[in-house]
Amino acid sequence: AQKITQTQPGMFVQEKEAVTLDCTYDTSDPSYGLFWYKQPSSGEMIFLIYQGSYDQQNATEGRYSLNFQKARKSANLVISASQLGDSAMYFCARGGSARQLTFGSGTQLTVLP
Amino acid sequence: EAGVAQSPRYKIIEKRQSVAFWCNPISGHATLYWYQQILGQGPKLLIQFQNNGVVDDSQLPKDRFSAERLKGVDSTLKIQPAKLEDSAVYLCASSPVKNNAGELFFGEGSRLTVL
Image (cartoon, rainbow over all chains, first blue to last red; front, side, top):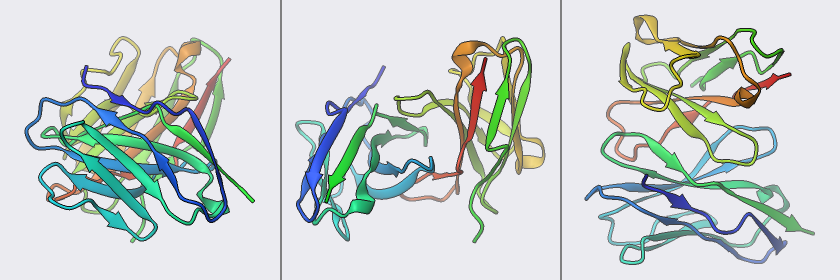
């Protein structure tokens, strides 16, 4: 199986600090996409950011940026200036030619005041 | 634009009973997915529809799970008979065909507890 690995079950960060959530992936698709979703305690999955495998630059969306290292097969999420509302589960996912997403096991982020 | 609608939000049943979940995708979205999310894990794909046809149901436990998407819009996921290990959140998602990013839009989920 082509896995998505998130090695940090839980992370803590101080409010206003930056935090990096790790993600590594396997794939045999020549073209693929990497996604990060946020899941608050209410349960909905909220799309945060996308990186295409052929994109030359790392993706950014507001306070979110994706540190994409293709050779290492890693796609880490960086959240700058953390806010209390960022406390949630964060999932890394990979999409490919089948137009499906395969998810990692998630990282529980807690932002401390 | 209305999001993906799911019902019921919560369901408690005893093992060996049956349950059905309903999903209404975003208008115009041709692709519909059902994911199972067990507590503490990431979502796992159960079935993918394109319009009213099944694209992938390789991970659907077909001895007890069934899903349909009549008329290519709404979808129903059924479990019969339920087992304890089916306790999970069932997430429905949709995506337009011409979606450059491949982003999925999720509903709020249906939480199933099997006693």
